Image (cartoon, rainbow, N blue to C red; front, side, top):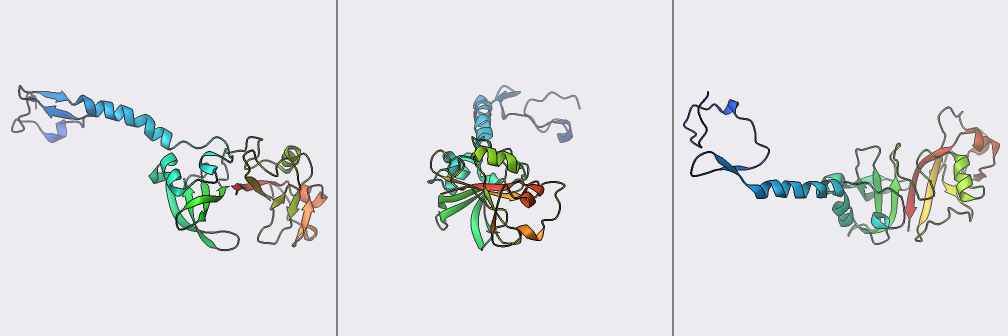
Amino acid sequence: RHTRFKCDWSSDVCSSDLRPLPVRFICHPEGGFRMRKFTLFAALYAAPSLAAAQALPSTLSCDGVFARNSSHARLVQVFGAPNVRHMKVTDPYDEVMVSVVYPRVETKKLQFHWADEKARKGLSSARVYGARSPLKTASGVGIGVPLAKIVELNGKPISIQGFGTEVQGSVSFDGGKLEKLPGGCRLEIFMVPGPGAPSPPDEIYGESSFSSDNSHMRAQKLIVGWMSVNW
């Protein structure tokens, strides 16, 4: 149990007595061991790169991974391959293949739709679905933002699609400040009833759109449920 380790594995040393070493070691002809320095340097060099590869964008915008020329390969480069999946999802109209970043992380989930689905490039839309996602536009639009704040940021009332349809809660900015983001892409948001809201009455059901000034809509305590940037 107390033999001296000189790289002689026939000595009385039990493998259970040895702890895994944090860096790579090699036996030396004179006995004992020497650390391979390059292994430690490589580990230290790689660690910042791994962290950077998994960073989430701070702003939903028209550039970076949200640019028109984005691609699945670009997502892998930015977020790391383990955090990006190419998978089938159901959108309001059909089943489509998309790239999903952080599919299992509620605060980070992003969904990318491609103009060229086969090549997985040319961004069509990037959607923020995470219920607690901190991602916002530069102006402050984000998941959970209430209707009154959206109207304020838009500079004028908005129109909201009635309930009971495939696109219920979709918003038209009606020529307001949120119509387009800096860089040329379009912002799309869907409003959903907030906590404690009553059941939507018949007056705001159907194919029609309703003004944010509508008393029944205001009673729904609407908040942003999901949003996207579109090209």
